[in-house]
Length: 305
Ligand code: ASP
Image 1 (cartoon, helix red, strand yellow):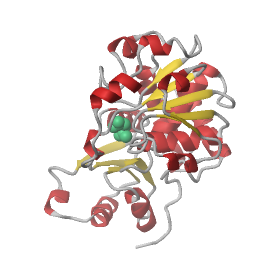
Image 2 (image 1 turned 120 degrees about the horizontal axis):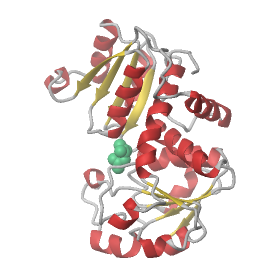
Image 3 (image 1 turned 45 degrees about the vertical axis):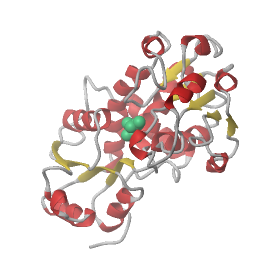
Image 4 (image 1 turned 135 degrees about the vertical axis):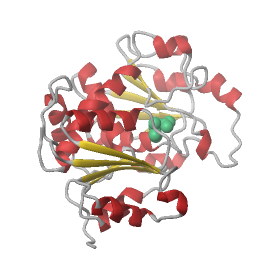
């Protein structure tokens, strides 16, 4: 049992330097999912998921397998986790059966960091509670770069349930580190004033029109119903005041893109028309998740792609 964060782990964006972020993004750009480099040949990658996932799980699996890894999926239901096994004991078990890397999603903030501290294998955070979702931020940065060529000076409006969103937290760290101008927008339950302390230069507005006006990127977020825990939020009111509609989208720059980490709830945080409009980069984000996760896993074993 060791107590060093395993090298190659990716636990969050908060403690990465801009250089480290760019290194991953550059490596992702070199990854061709149609001609994947066999960097993980013979490696065992465990996908340990304590929470639901479609995009993250499948793209990690596709990325790992296409680079030659053997992947094993462990879900909280149907494994010894159901019998009460602790997170660390599960980690020791996966290490004992030969894990070279563990990708973990967990409902509690800090779970991946705890595993990385005690295990000898790199741990990749695939979303921990309301804390971080670093690979989502990296694929969002990658997507913005493809459209805008730079992140520096790009005007980004993040609209919705920011308080409960690990995606928003990681995106805020990444975008501000790389010089974007970020505006947060939503009702105070979802965007407390305190949110400006997450990073320097953040602006909050309660009016979606104000947030979107002149924006290059509109990042909308799902209302995290599973994390509201007794909070009284009127969804009807939310839709009226904050939903991204085509009329509101017209306030953004003509070449603005609409992003969303998924799952999208059509008719709530955005309309059907916006989800499917030419400015929507939502499906592209999912696609970009594959090269980005290939780069993150190559980094984990010390092989920049
Ligand atoms: N899929 C993202 C996450 O796992 C966003 C969401 O669930 O709303 O955090």
